[in-house]
Length: 423
Image 1 (cartoon, helix red, strand yellow):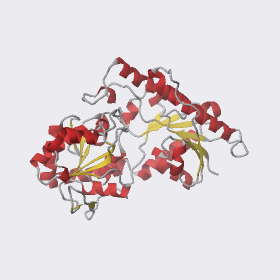
Image 2: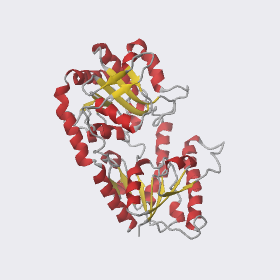
Image 3: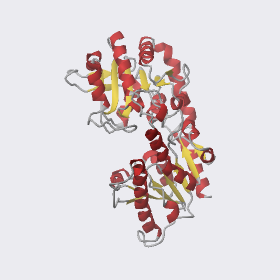
Image 4: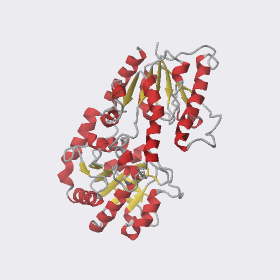
């Protein structure tokens, strides 16, 4: 008989997408508690309970405490639903999980230890805030100003995380960089296991092609193939945290020196960014930077695709002559590993999380985060001398195959699940 596992994730299934499939396949009974918007994302075979927020933040809440209050409100809402599952209101009989597996970042897990004191908890530990050398003190004009209030806000973000780190039996985190940010006592109970990359599906294909639909700047459309001078850039939402401002400045310099270079951008142009401060003017960063750079950018050769299906994203990686991945010292995107898995030549920022994956001149190329001129020079070399970088592409894919393959990561994740559930 399989184990009884409770899953918690605000963005369900989030990083548990593949792990959930493996748990279901071996016969574990899975329950999920998440927000009402998650209903459409719940996989078959997972029993789902939505939680509902009965109140919002108080009008007079101290601004520094408002984020913590939000997380406590979520934690109470989830615990209320969990208590109904525990006492039999939901199923007609009391239910006790063998393991609580979840992401604590938004507060949902705060009080589950009070509902099920005996149930071991395994947490996905994503980021510990305010550590020197991370996102809050990077030398970038678009970074959050380092007033004492901003430093305090980063510190307060960790209140929820510290409570959860203290109650979990074990944690897992995807990179050594993210692991290094945790307090020493939390590092001791946290394993570094990546979510995993499907290297069988994410692979190169010399016959791949990417079709750019006709538009006013490109009335006849365009078909891009491996070997074409194509620069690619992927952000879930275009934002300074992922270097969109640096990339577009570098692209302007590149276009002035390479008359046929094409650029493909994947992501959403929105004021509500994934990481960092939202824009207050209602405009996305891509729109603002397009205005600022003006005719220095030739938009006939720039192709923003918006959000695309995963199969199209794979084709973006496959036709790329150079894939740009820039990041503050922050959580690492799946897109970097997926591009490497497809054999793309990655030009990344020389920041700690990227350097964990890319060794300069071995598995990719690195430039300082804010060095737009250096980035442009590197991209120009990649377009002018593609054969020179073929070994880097091959070693990049090999690195992902050897250290981040989905089947190997899932095996380690399942071993950790069983070890914690058995504790």
